Amino acid sequence: MHRIELLAKSHDRERFDCGSELLNLFLKQTARQHAERGISRTFVLVDEDATAPIPILGFFSLNICQIKSESLTPGEAKKLSRDVSGVRLGRLAVAKSCQRQGIGKTLLVAAMGKFVEIFNMAGGIGLFVDAKDRDAKCYYEQFGFVPMPSNELELFLPVKTIQEALTPHL
Image (cartoon, rainbow, N blue to C red; front, top):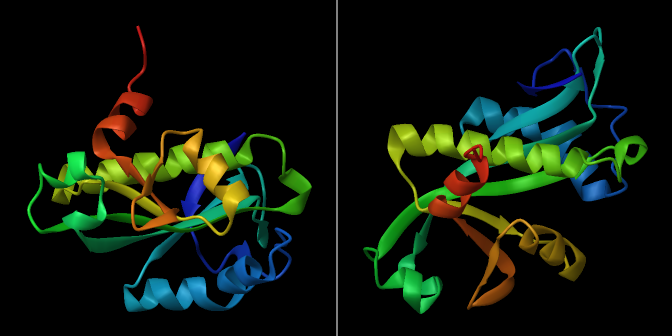
């Protein structure tokens, strides 16, 4: 079994390798500093039975963001004030040894759950992500993310879509 945890010193950041040096370096050198400074929070997926140093199977980071509503689709923008807040999925990565096993989906669903926790306390219009390339864009689109008109690699998942996805069907 797996569990999601807030990144801590007990996690083995040094041996994590997702195949992207930028994402590896973020986890190894930046994630804890961002947490200490209040910039973002990084969550890791680990095996429940692992002992320190705990191997990281995957991770995602979240931070609060603010955008201009006019950067959304016209249908979304007309319902909102000029400046709106949301949550940005800053990074998402899966260890090479765990890729193609559904871990990315597990992490994305967990990030959506964290968004709902934030939404319930502070509001927000949805989850934003900057896809690193067209393949990543296609990956996020299969979960309902829609491209922003101003930049097709910046995607948005409205709160209603997140709530519907996380509500168990009867």
